Length: 192
Image 1: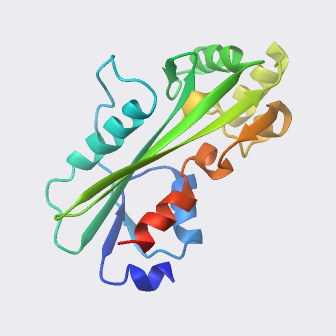
Image 2: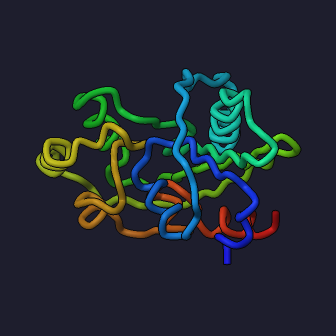
């Protein structure tokens, strides 16, 4: 269905994330991967979805040479805890601090998606609330050592070991926490 809907487009996924790439494959979208490095800096007054909307748009602006047939999809995910954004950790120490801060608390995972071509741009977002149990230092260290979550917002992947043992409740889309609100992306692409 979606493949037929997008047959006149050259879909570009601007993401290094293997999870996002797999979602596109699972949706049977024909796509190419193109990625342009951007410095992911945003105005400090932005909050929650404003941050991810801004960064998804910023990533899309790096593509200045889109053709009429190109359909560019960029996205960004953050973990939002106590009015603070947690991005990707730089190292083990930062990953430990992030996971320690999430321990025993509820946080939000926010993802924004920009869908853009020469004629239009639409930015959508989704938010999922996730509650973590109390984590021991041993559990945090085991996860960091074995899973190296340095490419993940908030230093964790829900689909990995930490998700199995740490998550008490989830309110909203599981797939959004993995990295893409697939249900919302599907709807927007079907409505093109």
